[in-house]
Amino acid sequence: MVMRFVKRTARAVRIVIGHGGIPRPIRWLAALGLAPIPGPFDEAVLLLVALILYLFYRQELRQAWRDAASADRRDNPAP
Image (tube, rainbow, N blue to C red):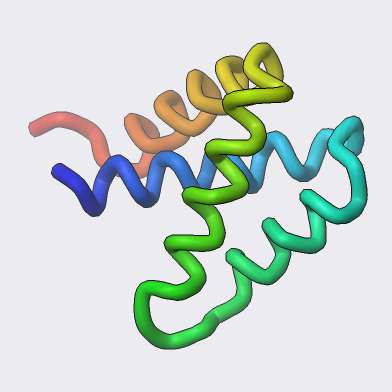
């Protein structure tokens, strides 16, 4: 359950960052979070970016959350 939430959050952050209306320092932080760093560091950075996006870019994050959910349903259909 928690891992699914983290994956969906990471996917939503990736979608929002790709739109281009987000300032560069936040995109750089997100890129660091998307780097294949072993351990929980990259997930923690992505959750921090998600918090920043939630506080200041709520509408964009909400739409990306919906898009991530539909992508998750596409990737993992219910039995």
